[in-house]
Image (cartoon, rainbow over all chains, first blue to last red; front, side, top):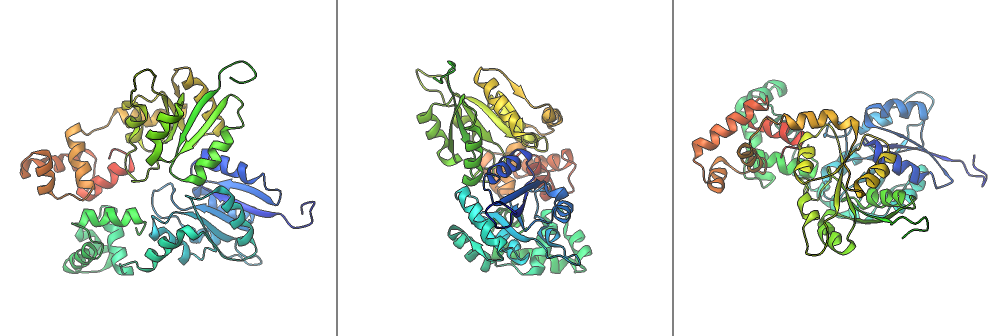
Amino acid sequence: MRSGGGAVIRVLVVHDACLVRSVLAEWLRRAPDLGVYDTPWRSAPARARSVRPDVCAVDLEYSDAYGLPPLGELRAREVGRTPPHLLVLASAKRPGLLRRALEAGALGYVDKEGSPDNLVRAIRRVAQGERFVDESLGFGFLKAAEMPLTRRELSVLSLAAEGASVAEIAGSLHLSHGTVRNYMAAITRKTGARNRIDAIRISQGEGWV
Amino acid sequence: MRSGGGAVIRVLVVHDACLVRSVLAEWLRRAPDLGVYDTPWRSAPARARSVRPDVCAVDLEYSDAYGLPPLGELRAREVGRTPPHLLVLASAKRPGLLRRALEAGALGYVDKEGSPDNLVRAIRRVAQGERFVDESLGFGFLKAAEMPLTRRELSVLSLAAEGASVAEIAGSLHLSHGTVRNYMAAITRKTGARNRIDAIRISQGEGWV
């Protein structure tokens, strides 16, 4: 409990670059109502279990694997406790990551292009179980809602982006080679790409895969 | 001049995410010998000309275009003044970006996985025109030195990664289609990739293109 009477909000900052994470955590510690912890992604689920934060504040655009962050792991359910609320640092330029955060049940969406004061406001709001969405992320959410690819197409594209061949994709998704080629053609058309490599580039840029 | 007598070191922090940049700049401002300015990449060259910093501290892994940062533009020469010294925030995981920074004449190399105190030490060193290299970046430099691709192969790969077809690559580099295919085959072999898409993925992950 802090002297003013209200409970301290426990915040776990998740970001892979120690330098950025430390500076961000130290900045947040100036707010007397926040108890701040920080961790890289690889130890984030374990830290979330031990720290028991009210809010996990997560940078969506940086992860060890340069892939999609495993947001769900931060909110794993345990008997006798409520999982932490999820807040993400995001960008309107990468609607795919916004969509992932929505699917993972994030309550807070803070624009990385905005002021850090927004982050403190968002943490307080999300700790109450209320939604916080930066206005400047509006266009990103619009694009996220208009995502042109089906779940199946995304699976095909993810494997292709990892360097899998048509035969390998067909094998792991139990599809014929022709079907995989049809999916790749549909993906290329829908993303407005010139070819397969261009489709992967566009989709990665927007954070779909 | 600061009260202690020594000149204030003018530092320009370059990072695209306003939230991270502001917090980092504010953190640096606690050091009494630093005069800190900050800017996103798109206005960095203009800001470097107006602020006339002693040191530009640049995050290599974040840029508007999700491509390679135009480091050279920060050190454009002007009559009657010395260009700022360059310091980069880098990661051993992306040797290609370290190599770019070397080629751009950077004096300071600070590991993003390290403590932010290193950044202050590095700024002071680089401002004196001395080199600063975080020990933990050693392996990254080793890999940078071992870069397997020739300049020509990198040009071909960069265009391929942007989604250009063999015909388009051939057209823009004035090569025959067969030569472009040979380059792509060599690139795939040298990067240990399974295919062209895998070669692009590996090379982007390490920051070569």
